[in-house]
Amino acid sequence: MRIIFRKIYFFKLFLISLSILKLVLAECISELTDEQSDIPSYIRTAASCDEDGNVIELWLKYQNLKKFPVGIGQNFSKLQHLYLGGNYIETINFEDFQNFENLTTLDLSKNMISYVEKGTFDSLSTLVTLDLSRNKISDIKEVTFDSLTSLVTLDLSQNSISKIESGAFNQLPFLNELDLSFNQITAITDSAFSGLQTLKILMLQFNQLSAIYEGTFKGLQQLQKLNLANNKLNAIDEFSFQSLTALLNLQLTSNKIQNIENVFHINLKKTVEELWENLEGNSLEQIFENTFEDLKNLTELELSINKISSIESNSFQNLHNLEDLNLGYNLIKELKNNTFYGLQNLANL
Figure 1 (tube, rainbow, N blue to C red):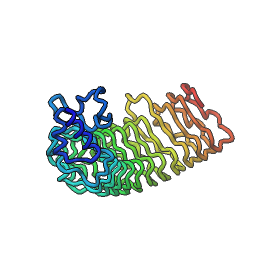
Figure 2: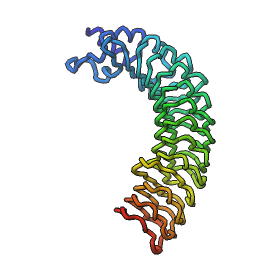
Figure 3: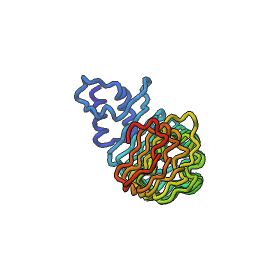
Figure 4: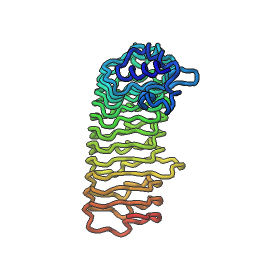
């Protein structure tokens, strides 16, 4: 038994071949006990196995790998979770992912990947979670993710993505969360998110977006959280958010928005209990009477750190569920009659 343990330790330090790893894991790391103190704890988390001794989870994070390890799929046919984050992998292709018939989690975060070839993920139809964050990917092609028909979570944050082709996510019918934050996206084409009928969370904060158009979010009827904070937004089309009927949380913090009149035409479902909207840190100068008329379920409205000097009478009259309203750090000198008319549930101002 001690020979097996020494071999496991040797693997962790020097990355011996995966075929040898298969042999030394015959007793499975998951069976090690705390009494076996000669085996460091981090070794025990290198892999885990099912009750039949099959490796189902493999951690190869921060191992200075420059290429995708050869033979993982062949040697570990039952593998479900593979973690390769924190390495120096530059390229991935179709050959790397052959024989991964049971893989549900793939973590390739914090690598050096700049381009994803067409067909790279064609054999990963069972994949549920894909993490490609903190790489150097610059664009997303239309067919990049077409084969990932079971995908639920996709993380592309902290890359160098500047462009997303129309229909890039067309074939992801079960996607629930999409993170595109901290990229260089300057514009989103119509139909960029078409096909994402089940998407609930869309993260677009810290990009270079300057405008949102009517068709940008078309088809996202299940979207509950939309984060557009810390962009360069100065123009939002009148019907940009019209199709977001399930929206609960809208973040527009720290943009350059000057006018939001007629922007929030959202036909919210009756089942929605609360909507939180953040417009802090923009360049708003005036609030008009009809600005928030369709947001009857709004519970929290953040308008601080703007340039608001004027609020028309009855501007909040339809916000019967509003509990928190922040107008701090603006240029308001006086308030008109009926400014807060209709806010019968307001608790904090």
